[in-house]
Image 1 (cartoon, rainbow, N blue to C red):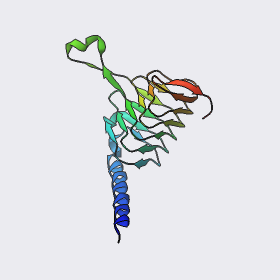
Image 2: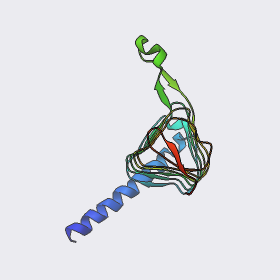
Image 3: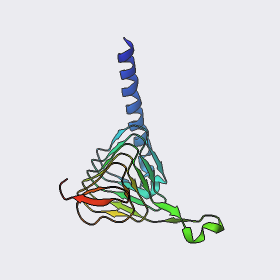
Length: 159
C-alpha cells in the first residue's frame, strides 16, 4: 500500500469514527432527525439544548453553543468554521463579573450558513436563506434570499 492510499484509508476511518461518535452522543441532543452528515470535527456545547432536523450537514470546525437553545431545521448546511452562539455577555452588568444572557436561535429549513459565518443570540432565520462566508448575523432574517457582510445584509432574492 503506497503512502497516498494509507492516508486516504486513515481519512475515511477518522470520518467514520466521528459519525459513530455523534451516533453515540445522539441521546444527549434534544432531537435529531435522520440523515445527518458530519464532515470533520465539530464542537457542540450544551447539546441537550440543541435540536437538529433531517438532512443536515455539519462541516469541519463548526461550533454550536446551545446554552440559550438552538433549533436547526431540515436541509441545512453548516459550512466549515461557522459559529452558532446562543449566549452573550450582559453589557449592562459587565463590571459585576460578566453575567451571560442566553437567547434562543432558530434556523429554518433550506438554509446554508457559509464558511466562517457567525449567528448571534436571539436570531431567527426564516426558510430558504443563504448566509455568505464570513457574514455576522446579528438580527433576525424574515425574508428569503442571500445575505452577506458584517452585519449581514440582504443581497439578492436569488438563492
